[in-house]
Length: 166
View: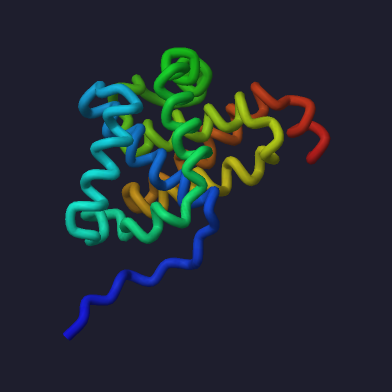
């Protein structure tokens, strides 16, 4: 009998890079390791047995398909700017950020980073990608929370773009 990967819609290279960046940001929140160490650890885990990462349904083949430059830039950028990013999104959360699940916090860091530093990506795309990450890795309703917070962050950091869409 063969094991079957859980069904997931096909993801593009950029979406996969966000998934791996999310795993890296999560690891950073847990361990405090630097981006280079986290990348090495992730690559080591993927190459050890080729099996999907537990709970993630992504594997070495997915990493080969991801936009590695985007992955590295996201991971390093979030770690470098984490304090500023948390200050931006913490205005819109209903609790201390230490009480957010690590998945929600990781997704919010990643989404806020893309909203602030990747203005070439439409804000709705950033939010949609973050919501998909929260659905894939988070609890049952975490994606709604992420959507609400990032919608408010977008209104702050991309007021002109958001205003033009309304």
